[in-house]
Image (cartoon, rainbow, N blue to C red; front, side, top):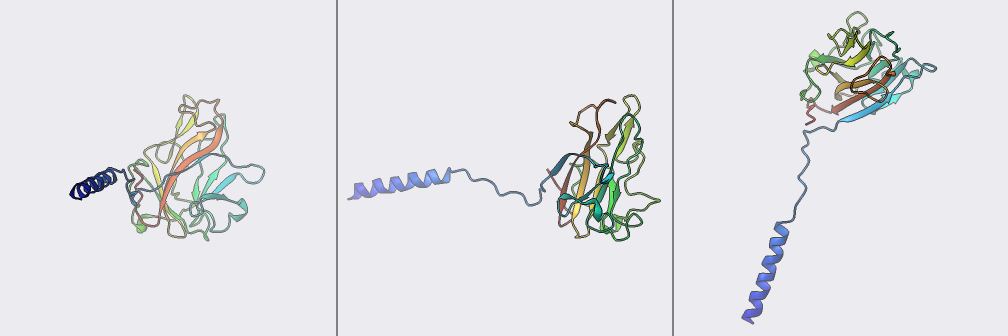
Length: 209
């Protein structure tokens, strides 16, 4: 009887040891946000020369809603062949559209290094005279112009932070303006295809890695 008891005890210990060695997936860090991306979106010049995007819904909205607060950012049609020398991206607020409620600020840091949104008082409405995202592509804003290749490129050191009408905080970065997202575009690359990424949060935390 005692021998049977010892065998049973050893079997139970063996089972417990196996259970202790079972790997368990770690609990996801709630502070690490999901990075969402959109690839090669292009305005339709037949319907509208702009794309209207809502970060709250995570999708483009009908251009017919341009006079409402249903969108957050407007991306313009870009002309190739060196014709585009400025990029007129606007937020839905201020004198751009008095109904809109999206405020923002361009931060001088990379997308990955930006881990929190500024205080709300620093996020401003867009204005027709003083823009949140500078129109010029001279390196002071979110884009640069390379005269040797006559190409437009995102400035990796600039990240847009905005707050939507629903109180969602977002960080946003354009990755490419060309079809196929070439690492080194040329004058022959097709311009006007927006590829971008963003992360959003219900609080000021914008940590993504």
